[in-house]
Length: 465
Image (cartoon, rainbow, N blue to C red; front, side):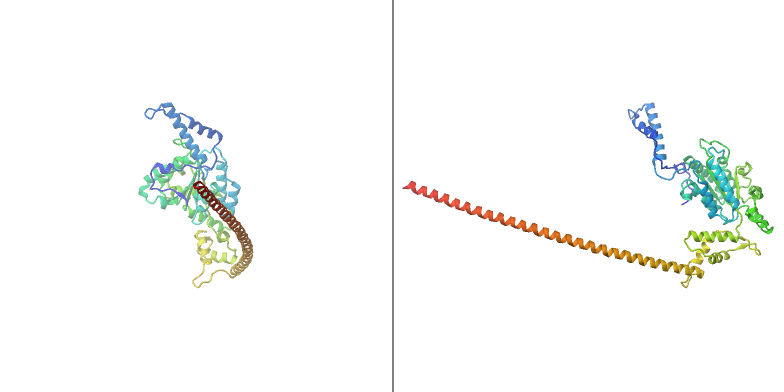
């Protein structure tokens, strides 16, 4: 889930509650500090606490709470400077972004230079311009993923969509206050926060100007340092200018890789500043040169669309097939109408088109190339054979183990019965011996009793005589 701004939340509690839980253990010095806090005297009376003990206790409680939250609690860690793997970012861009040599180069150099700077003079601001489906959102997601492992789901990456979070133009004054509070609270929690503004061309210009102080050359504003934050603006504005430039290069027989940033950057800044529907119309961000990089996204040709389709197939774990790729690519819409050079929607609907050709049709068959079906059937056959072999082996070992276990269990039962029989025999013998002994003792006692009575009677008769 992307962490996004919610305009209905106006309380500072929600804004400043983005404290970054870290996964580090507290250092020995920090642990000693926490122990010292526990040893400090608390107020001696509940009614009139002394000012010094109370102040010391409150100070240590605050410091201790900070370290406990920021050093001991689990969770994603706020990214420090110099911890972005630039090589991995470059490889990811080369592997997943096609036909955008300018965008990849500018993004890589701009971001890597910024994160390597221990003391930047201002926050990084990049403005992505180009037609739909050319990779603006995609590159911003790649940037987020390389800054934080959770990518767009990270608590330190915040995405704003104009039509979703700022839908009512008449409420832009309220949006300004809420946006400033959100940025202030999250940068306070993590200096390396990332803010992505989508559909900037639909945003009120004064709403964009509300974040101008955070992009300016200030060391801090109200005690908060914004110079390590990253702001990315996505806009479809100036798309026509970029399309015209790319088409002119194509008509002149030049390759698109010959297009340089100097050919388009000046036109981008002017069009963004002068176009009323650009979001940057007469914006102080452009007037004061606070946008560091204008990143143009060129329209995609059919060869680039095919690369997108191939990447989508590989990501889905499907066997790559050129016939399927061509079939999906030919089903896309291209312009100009006669030449059909550039894709109208770029790679935006590639996933939907691909699913259309891979899903079963109404009659239950699969509409996909024959050689892909052959490979799929072969793969399914091998899978079934492998599954049968594994099942046979597992069944064999199961029955062998079950038989051995049953044998040992029966032996155990036999030994138990023998032991129980022997114990019962000895117990019965013991009972028999005890009974015989008791009977014998009883007989002797009775004989003794009779004898004593006889003697007593004899004595009595002798006395009478």
